[in-house]
Image (cartoon, rainbow, N blue to C red; front, side, top):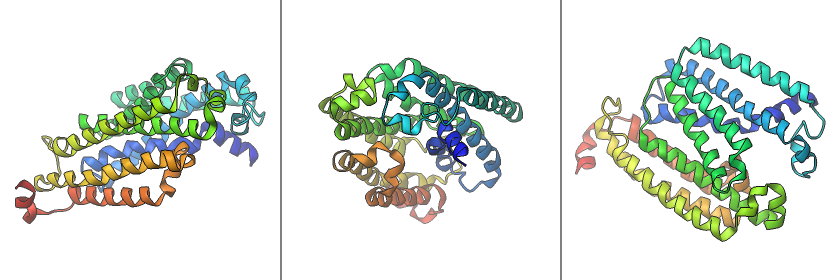
Length: 310
């Protein structure tokens, strides 16, 4: 059992939730309840999760010696603490690559293949170059979410709005910047430098400025998407519904404000994005945003058209 848990830690299964962004395309394309597309989409989700593990494994092999000297990382990294050998890690890599090749033969989707290769290449670029360069590190991490979102659309042949693509990127950038601030608040500058060398180039005031900049850009871009993004040729969403999405902008703004508040008031949650779902304010805002989205994109509101268009 311990070996299985060690393998899960090496693959970073706890990070697989990040690939759920692949499902954003079907929601905003109005195909959330088109169950015929789910088998391929779920299989693509699994393949994408395994593909993202390639970067994690290679990173752990590359940083093996430095992780052994890191009091926090040695507890979480099975190669550093000796739970797994490098041989096991290499075997897992070979198996994942084999699964990747077989899945590409099955899907026969060139765009999906290219986007996954971009995701893997982005992981390599981050591990070997970007994570050593201030701000390039968080931009590199955030770009991964673009490839994930586009891959989810490519596998079922739907087009994601450019507005939404940029919104996904800015959301990831906003969260990553907040996490950097939370690290500095919790660890202090000196300990943060020991945690990640890149923190030598960061300061809390500087990151605070970028957090506000990211928040502003995110809200403006989401608002533009709500006004312009859904109105696309060939959309299966009833025209009279589309204008309703703009009423989600106050909720989106609340979620942005709430996250900024948590960066200062509860940085432990912000350091681990998966813990954000334990915050009542984020839960409330997320549910409300989802309800407005479903009403806007999926419910027939014909008689309300005059109100939306007025």
